[in-house]
Image (cartoon, rainbow, N blue to C red):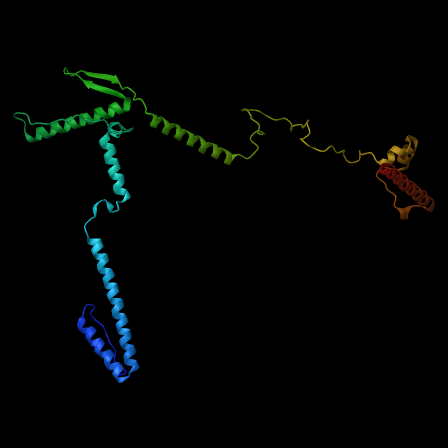
Length: 291
């Protein structure tokens, strides 16, 4: 009895319900909990199966049912088609439908070819082919030279200049937008190719020769004024008198500098005194500037 299981195969079977009820009664009579548990699982599965089948039946009836008046949902594509049909009936698209588009070919007149008397099949096809070639050549000539060819009854060909069609406002706006877009593209391309030295480039004419490099006569903008090396005045030059400066420069020999180890004792003493005097004077100048 422990391996007994209740399986429900059919949803609408009343016999299986009766068998399940009998099985439950026997299980309680025999006090077998395992059998009672199996029965409860079967009943639950049976109940869930009924619910699922009921939902499916309701959904299938709803899907396959006939439309219920104006309550059904209408797709947007169908609504758009209906709206366009209504606007066409009202005449809103009558002008644009008959308007010639740019680049459209000229409509040919309907020509009916009929076989002439005593004309063979070969002659008829040849004449028809010749007429078609003449019509194509005439159309190409009109498009190339922008004229209209009109053949009179006596065979004379009349040439008339085509009248230019007046452009609509929409065509004018499209043309202006295209020009503006091309201008923006050219401007962006020009800015990308700019290096920043276009204004500084020289325009050289044919056969021009430069005999010398250019001479710079003006200083660059915001350039600092600096003295050349050796020309800057020191602070001590203002203190020393003209006689003292001349004596100092006379003592020096151009291209020769005496090191301290090569000097005599007397020269070393004189140099030390001059150095101390210069340092003292420099400190005094700094103190006066600080005050």
